[in-house]
Image (cartoon, rainbow, N blue to C red; front, top):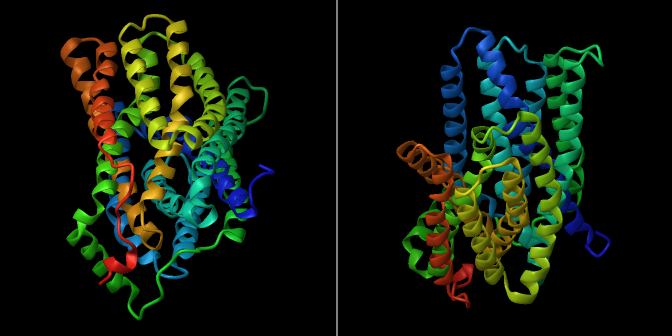
Length: 424
């Protein structure tokens, strides 16, 4: 950390800040809390699961469709920080509301959660785009990787605090109900997210921008239309996005399906939580390692290495039988999960015209969000047809192979013209 500038440190710390939301709200605690609240209100388990899926899909779709136009407007001077701050405040406020809304009000809880998803997703569009403002191109791989590493480390602390509160309440160690302990975990998440975002709000500024115009919204739409009109000029960038769509779909599917896959193998919930925690810890140093190796062997090369590791993971998953096998699989995932995500962000940041970076990170967000569709469907369909979950995970190899082939075809040199030639 000492080798980084103040701006770089402040940017990296936002990964540390928002990681609490990622693991406690979207992955570990709130999904179980909502299920219990909805089922306690008389909803069937299948119905509450369906509502949970609808809520995630709608919120994700909304922010994804808005991302390019918001990004196009944010390319004008002073708008990027304003949008970041707005979505950050939205996420924080409604995460706090999760801690105070009575658990019996399952519908209000679900609506609040949907707003947090929009706040979290919206903030990340502009956070990723700020990478070009805080560091130089030759340092992007390392800074992006350190961000992911800090996120993995930072996520473990509130995760332990939240899980500890819930376990102690279950065992009667502390005089709190499980409901109150869960609500306390949501409050910890909001506070963690808020406090560690202060350096980002204070020290990170928009360096690359377009001059303000009288009607930024109208001009934002106009610039978005112009980008589509001249899309052939962005061939390397969009070819990378298509490659990213496939391989990141595989990465995300393995993350989201991991607990269900582990359960099918007969691994207990306690062991799954321990493995999840260990994966977060191990992923941190490997994310930094990927960043260092990318500076030596090029980011594209290390992305292909990460894709190869995931191909091995898919093959190994086919033969998985024991808890030890699952541990090995989890450590393989940890070795490349953060690296492939971090280098994708920095590789893309190097491709985009800096004055239009927000608009293009809006497209990046769309491809990332919509890359959560094909993989789970492929796993589910294959598992259902074969009657074997292992075969379902193995089927993801197709996504990594397609993504790798497309990535190889991305030109090494970038012929993308400067932004001023595109606005003519």
